[in-house]
Image (tube, rainbow, N blue to C red; front, side):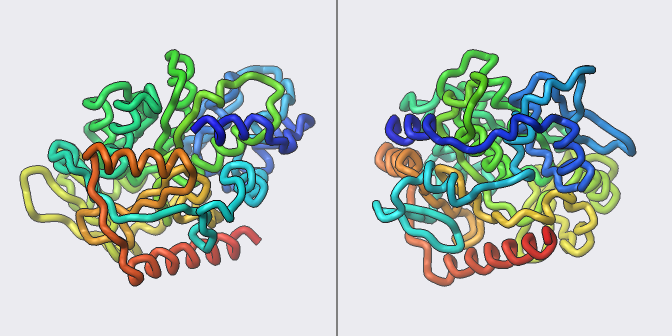
Length: 368
C-alpha cells in the first residue's frame, strides 16, 4: 500500500490559484452541473452545503471575504478532470498486471458474496462493500470508514464507522444525492489516520483530484488510504422520496426495508413482507440530479475497488480490483473467509460494458 500512496504526493496538477468560489458558482453551480459530491465543503471551512432557493441543496460560501485560494475550483470534479493524468499517477504502469478498456483500469474482477450471515441479511446484493471494509478495518489497513447511512425516512446521512457494528449500518444502497465527501472532513477532525471511503463515481473523482493536486495547504488528504466506488448510472434528488411515499409507501418510508433498481424498474421492499412495489424508471427520471446528466463514469473508474450488481447473479456483487491496495483487500478478504468469489461470465461483463458505453455517450452528448 505504501508505494502507491507515497507516489500520489508527487503529482503536480494545476490548482488555478486565481479562481475563487464565485468562479466555482458561475462555472458549475449556476450551470446546474454540480453533482453534490461535497468535495468543496470537505476541504474548505468557508463552504458549506445548505438549502438555497426553492429548497435546492447546494454549496454555499458562508463567510464575507473570498480569499480566492483556488482550492474549491481545483478540487471540484466538474471544473476539469484530467482523467489520463490521474490514472497515470494512481495506477502507474498499466502494463504491470492491469488491463484498460471502457470500464477503466483494472487488475482483476470477480463475483463476490459475503460469508457473514449478519451482513447478508442487510446487504443490497452480495454484501461485498461491508465485508471488504470489515476486513480492512480488522487488519488495520484503515482505522475508520466513511459510509452513508439513512434516517427512518431514508434520507442519507454520513457516518464515520470505526467498528464492525457501525459498518453494518451502511449496508444497502441509497438512491438519493448526498455530499458524502464531507464525511472525510469529519473523519480527519475525529483523529482518524487511515480512512476508507465508500462513494459514487463523482465523489471518487473529487477525492482523486485532491490527492493528485499540488497542495498549497495541508488538508489531510494523505490520510485517505482506500477508495471504494459504487456503480452508478444516475442518482436522484430527495424529491424522489416524496414521490415514492405518494405512490406506494402509505404516507411514510419507515416501513421500507430496501430500494433496488433492477432492469427498468425501481423496486421498493417493505419490512416483514415478501411483496415489493415496482415503479418504472421512466416515471422517476424527472428526479435525476441535473449534475448526473453530464457524468460519463458508470463504474467508478478511479477507485481502488469498484462494486455494483450488474454482471453477477442475483445475490452477488460485481467487484473490480483496480489498484495494488484494492487487490490486496479483495484477496485478503477471500483468504481470511470474509467473502467468497466466483467467475463472472462473459455475458455479464459485456452487460457492464454496454451500460458503461451508454453512460459515456450520454454524458458526452449532454456536456457539449
